[in-house]
Length: 283
Image (tube, rainbow, N blue to C red; front, side):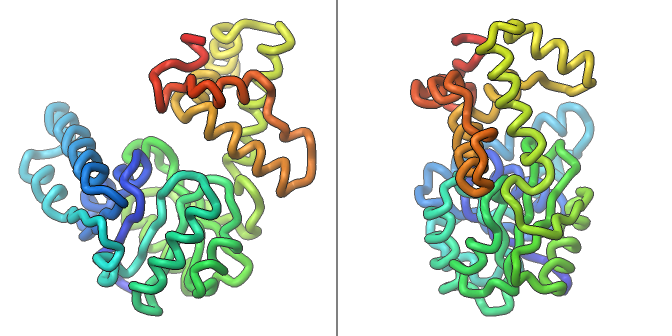
């Protein structure tokens, strides 16, 4: 398959990031969300990101305008019908994702490949909800999409080789590096390693082993990570960390994934960088 057009459902940080790199790679993009203000906000974010690239002379003004011209927006999922691949990038809510795929499958041709950008949830279960599990896979981008080079391509139980080939073609077209997740397991590769690590950092804090600042400094200088665990939690949101840990605990049947109480308190209070600008460094 030669991919020329993709659809994206969800105009948040991840959806707008995927739209940007796809448009910059010469693909036509349809970006959908439930409200016009959400897609308009996404286009403004993309415009701002591209303008920074122009100022830094990494992109020409003409290239910026050409990329923006390739992006169309809609609040009607029917606008996705011409896309060869549709990627869901809504919040990490399994039932919401299922409902999205049920509707998307009803408006897209049978040969359209459907994919989820979930960071942790069951590709197999979402594929079943789509009604086309053989033409369904996970294509998990990392935040921020324009910067992060890795993409996980995840097989569900019924995902066909042809579907994986389409996903690989798309990811390579976007200039990213593919790693394949051969078995659909919670968290795939990166988050299966990362999220328990974040939880353990919260445990160290709760036990009084070290301060937030010293834990982050130790990880950055001792492990050569670009961000410390608490900086990372603040960026993504304590609520998302808790959601993923709860999912791991339920799906993998182990209390070792139970979220630390300090994370749950943060999530319940809404004190996280993504929503309020207040995270562990302001807690």
